[in-house]
Image (cartoon, one colour):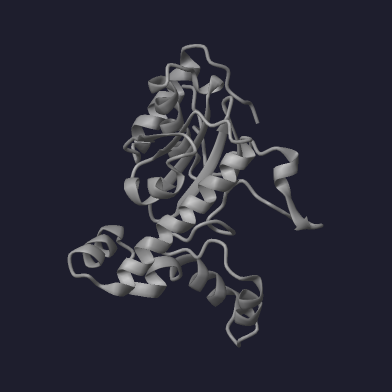
Length: 224
């Protein structure tokens, strides 16, 4: 029985220039929500009357972690890896001030503690004590909680900045920007860049099945 991996998180289609970090020996890594991103990108391309391999898209994934990627002609040519950079998520810090991170590492806590703190207790959780975005949204708008409103606004702001960076990657020739939450909050920033599409994500099992079917129906698969 044939077995396939479909768009795992370590999918690396970044260009050589996108891998350059700014310090020799430290390479930018491609590590993002590839399964959901590529599934959404294929749906968006179809709505635009194109194949995924013909489209130029910016896709924003928003879950416990977030990722923003530029998709060009069937490849995710650059992305923000929430483990290292870009907008913060519900419990991950995203891009943090380098000197502040250095100070944290030398504050007397262990490497394991630093990784746990920045990987599972950072982001929105560090500000408002919840990892549930719906809770942040409710408290921000129903309870008028100023801390939650600031976090909500900051997440939208940082994601919009990431979208703008990916637009530059695509030389501002963007067919659509695709996301599933924050519609108006992000659109207020990036709505003039390209058409906005809102599509539901998080259909991992369906996306896995569709990926296997594409190969079984003749689409070439990569062999590792």
